[in-house]
Length: 269
Image (cartoon, rainbow, N blue to C red):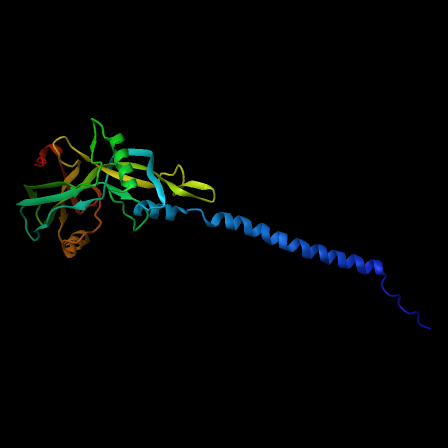
């Protein structure tokens, strides 16, 4: 005769039921623990928002300022072709040509791509004030966004079977740091935010350096390039369009550079 299986005791049923109730009670608490930190972060101003608000001089801001961290004087700017190209290809003799040289310099600010800063904004005023700090008796810089020009004519020699033109690289004082924005209303209990971060040195302001005679300071040189070479063909085919050019003495074997002394650059009226 088979002995019937005893039914589960009431105690064991109660034990399993209690475990289920505990699990269900803990689940909502764990979910809340995840949601709270996400809510705390939602209202904070991101670096991109700080940059955009400062650039637009947003009404949300009490102030926005540039905080300088480090600087470098006599930093050379981009290499620019600043005269028309004279061709002396297929010849065996040098040619003297009158070159019209023209360029200009202005204060430039390197923020995120697509952002500009007007001089009459809080941030623009801050850049001007920082510029005063770096304007010395030894180095005169342009603190605002006004343009300073360089324009003159001079005669120089283009070598046989070469093209010739003038190149320029402006001297600048490169001041780097970060943005500090103070908002009128606190966001998550905080009114001050930074872009890209406090203590960073990735926001650059380039203040052009000016000589005592009013001429922009920089490196000016006459460049001769051997005709028929890839370097010369690239320049001729580009016409007057802007293109990246190697720096002084960096053009290779087909390129000859001769620097012009600042004393030989006429003062600007």
